[in-house]
Structures are given as C-alpha cells and as structure tokens.
Image 1 (tube, rainbow, N blue to C red):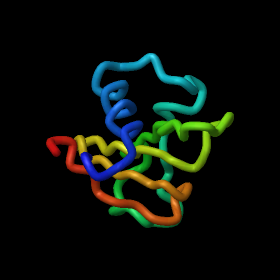
Image 2 (cartoon, rainbow, N blue to C red):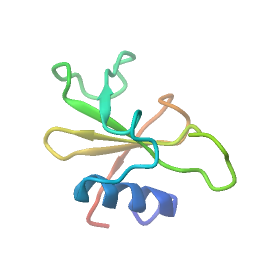
Image 3 (tube, rainbow, N blue to C red):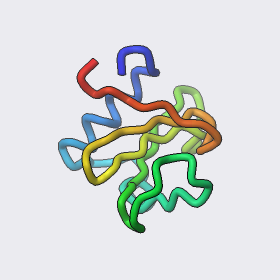
Length: 89
C-alpha cells in the first residue's frame, strides 16, 4: 500500500471502519467484474469504493475493490488495469 497514492490508505481505513464514504450512493456497491480482470467469483463478491483524486471535482478514475475474503485491488484507470494491494505494507 505504501507505493500507492496516499488516498488509497485513507479509503481502506474508511472500508474497515464502515465509513462515512465521500460518495455514499456509489461507495460500497457491488463491482460486477464484467471484464473478468479480477479473479472470477460469484456475483456480489466484490465491492467498489472511490479513491479521491486531489484537484479533481468528481469521482475520478481511481477505485479500490474489496473481495469477500478481504483481498484488495486498486485501479487508477477506471478498471482497465488492477494491482493487488497488500494492506499490511
């Protein structure tokens, strides 16, 4: 996590504490993984959260995806690519 934007750690903290989230109608919703860029799991397995982009007025392209077994994935390009996030680092 230490190599990612600082806002990723802030968003992760909101996830583990239950919010409040900056975009409550979008944060915590089911991520469908339609493009199959993450490991394929049953519907409802993944949830997405907005990672704020400094200086950007809207939601931006950055997201943190959490899995039901506590795995984390970060995308800085709105789901085109993902990196595995180690929350212990």
